Image (cartoon, rainbow, N blue to C red):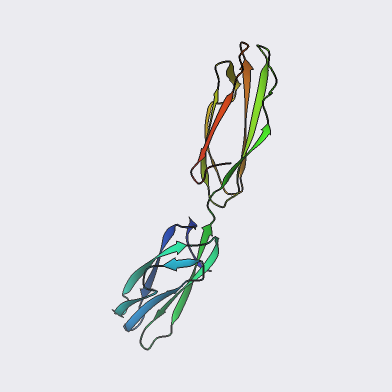
Length: 193
């Protein structure tokens, strides 16, 4: 079974380290190379020289691997040396698309005139249509003639890829002025729409 490398998001990097050991006799001209599929890249040399390994000795080489597009990849690492059979191992790397938060109004506040003591409700659905987690903050600021009777004025939560969360607020009307509800939404991955 392939080894696993930490999951990353498109545009991020992770480190792949290969450890090569000589069992039995010493091995000279030892090289270790990495083969990356399309969608992954490294600025390191694909083939790195270890030199001579004495019997029982081991050495490690590393590559910084960047994810350029979302997918699950198999990376092949090959070790070669004089008078030995090439050895290969595979590593699996998952590259997720970035989180992408969208907001949908599920229920709108009453837009006609509310009498003092009446209430109205706002419900919003937050969805992460991306592949990576995103931190979301939603802040509700009613004007002076409205007070929040249900729900929190400030909300922070994480949404994993494919996950949704609904928030609902109830507002109580006082007085006779025209009022507004300001909603401020931000996420760690995009400007929600």
